[in-house]
Length: 371
Image (cartoon, rainbow, N blue to C red; front, side, top):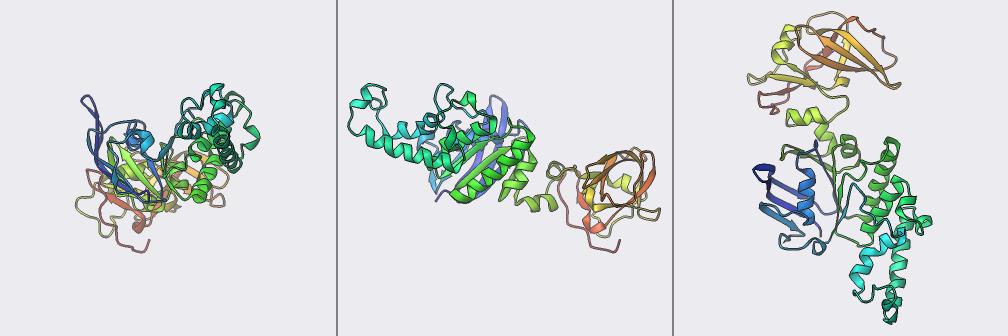
């Protein structure tokens, strides 16, 4: 079993706190993604799990056992870094085989010339070769085993780094922004490959990224971090439709969620929703939950600032009156077209509105009423 439990983890660098009492349980075999902006503490938390950083408070447990006093190689975890961390002078085969040789051969047996004198080395090397070739075939790099890392593309290097982690058969894979150095097309391909690898291996994956698309498409659950705090942990769909913090709502989703203050909502002509709480200061809604309509009571007025035509979707960027800011409306290509400069009205179904208080905390859902 490889359940990972974090209890009140804290980390400081001098007077700066980067992780603020984070508690989290990652289930055995789960794909959990830590997502947040740069500097939010997600990579630090991953390194604490790996044993590469020591926390200032709290406890890390793997499989029910406290591992705070264990070195990284004793924690049964494998880490894949953003920079791949491949040895440039070694072939792909030797890079993948390195952890197996380090674990199974003594220092003397690993020496190039002297090591051949040890009778057991040959049998161990045969077993290592079989395991390396099996991992390479799974990752489609078997034809590259003789090459050096400098002769590989970014995606191929990432597969080699994954292969080096796989041959150790760890209980937990830790991945620190492994796709950030790849181009957009290759990132999409590698997302699918890592997800498929997780299904085949069935072990625990903890993945760190600042890219919400990676988090939403790959994960069983997503943990959103900001400023060293863990804001919400939930499946991707729940994060999108039911965020418990305004910061989560603004981070998850593309285009970004629309936020209008309660005062501006009324000033712009929006009908006050049934069930609106006294503490509500902000109303938020997704771009696809708004619709362009004709003038009428309860509709927000604005002007079209610009139009983004993505083929399958049209994004209307609207400027609201009274200094209320801007919103985005997502429409279908077959819908009536507006032009830049047009005055339009926007209606939002009240049941789709989210209400937040002055601290950004989510309040109860609004009642469903007819539009």
